Image 1 (spheres, each protein chain N blue to C red):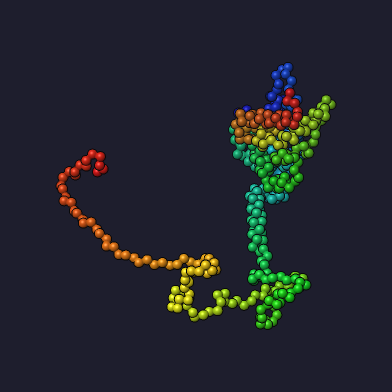
Image 2: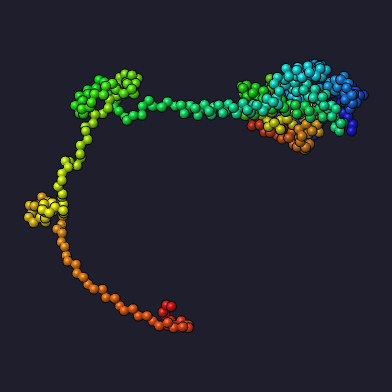
Length: 209
Length: 233
């Protein structure tokens, strides 16, 4: 199986594949594993972010996922891509974090952000804003804010699929492996999430076309 | 960012057909939410955790992570169940310890001290001097200084059927004084409108009862005789 050689850091693709680095790490080369961390850090971080919703928590989850991957790298046989294997570990760690009692307590005793009845998803306050183009109007800004708020109210299955698909780092196959759902189910969830969002936005008064 | 490799990038509108503003807004919002770079130094932090000695790593991990989540996750339900049990127990104890009335004696009248008590004192039956009032009575009097408890005086119970005599009345009286006779004069009738009618006794005659003789028909062996038409069998 061909290993992914994509360099997600934006530099030139390396001649050394992930599988080569994995073999070196399995032999005890810590620096080789460091290179794997560098190559996959963004994908791991964004997967964790899609699950827990907080950059700080996503950073913790990413660290735990990498440490766990290092400890278990001897069990990696190369049947799948290293990134897919790593993302599966990351998603399990993130789910554990999402279900943890401390997080539950924090969300329970923090003041509610809206009356939607869904769990709080605190992207809007924690993620730094990226550069905006000049032509984005105030109306578009308000629309985006409403979209982000409504994404937080989506059912978790739909929201996870939509956000993972929107990271720009994961293919549908990787998302399918992470979520443990068939590929068609993942695609349907993304489509359904968009349909629900459109319906809610239309109910808020935004024109569909 | 390499957005062209994402599933969102594959969802493109056909050439010449602009995407709806809502679709574009959804794409933009999701990208804004998700396309965030990890904090700087992630590789360094990971390598520091990996390269630290196992014992130190375990200790530092426990410090960073706080209480172990898996072991804390289950007790979270335990804490909730314990809190629920305490609430239920508290309600049960509060119900059982609800204030019991100070006295369950027979109800007594509460009489205002300034009210005239002449009538009740006149009707009061002579009672022996019992000394100080009972404890419960005093405690009630202390708690409510404007009123005092006082038993309602009742006269001694007499025989409601009058004085008992040895005389026998009605039909067993041999003198016949207790038996009324039929009134004959109009003035007496007017005075006794509801008097009973006179009792008339008529002699009862004895008539012998005649019974018809019993006739036993002879038993015939064979087919039963057929009933003539029109008669029930």
